Image (cartoon, rainbow, N blue to C red; front, side):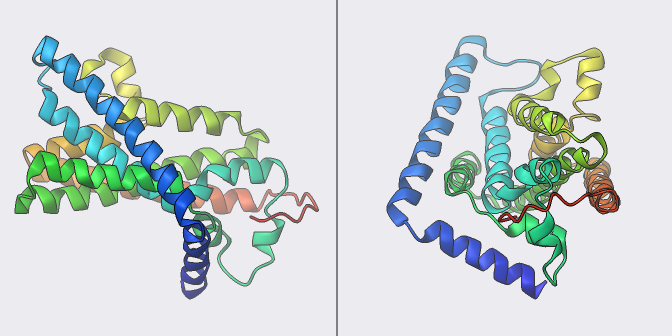
Length: 255
C-alpha cells in the first residue's frame, strides 16, 4: 500500500505541475457538464416528469455520475489503459516492480480534465441537497460504492483482453456504461432494462444510489453493497487470472 500511495502522490504532482492547463481542462469539463444539466432542465420543464423521475432526481443522478466518474476517470484514469497495455504486451514495466501490479497500474495516472467532473458533481449535489445531513451521508457512501463498481467494471472489461487478445470490447463497455449511467434506467423497459442491471451495471452505478439517497431502503442498500463487492471480486480475480496467461511483449513502456 505504501508503494501505491507513493505512486499516486507522484501522479498527482505530475497532474498539478501545470496549474494553468489543469484549470483550463477542469473548466472545459465543468462547462460540458453544465450543458448536460441544462438539457435535462429544459426537458423536464416541457414534460414535467417521466416514469417517476423529475428534474431534482435527475440532477441528483448527474451528481452521482459525475462525482463517481470524476473519481474513477480522474484519480484512477489508467484503468482505461489496461486493455491496451495487455493487448500490446506493455505490462512488463509494472510486473518488474516490487509492488502489486494492479494497484500500481490503477494509481499510475491522473487525468486533470476528469477532475472537473469530480468538482462539478460535488457542487451539483450541494445545490440539490443543501447539505442536509442524512442525504449527504448517503451520497458519500453511495458515491464510494458507485466508484468501486465503475472501477471494477472497467477493470473487468480491460482484463478480458488477456483472454480474447483485443481491447475493442473494453472500449465499447466504457462508452456504454458512461452513456447509460447518465439516464434514469427506469425509462427503459424489458430485456434492455435487465441488461443495465447485469451486463452493463449502469443501473447500479447511478439509478440505485439515487433511490437510496431519495428514500433509503435498508434491503436495497445491502443489495447495492453486495453487488459492488461481487463486481470488485470478479474484476480482481479476472485480472490476476489473466496475468497467468500474459505474454510479454518485450516492450518497456510507462505502465
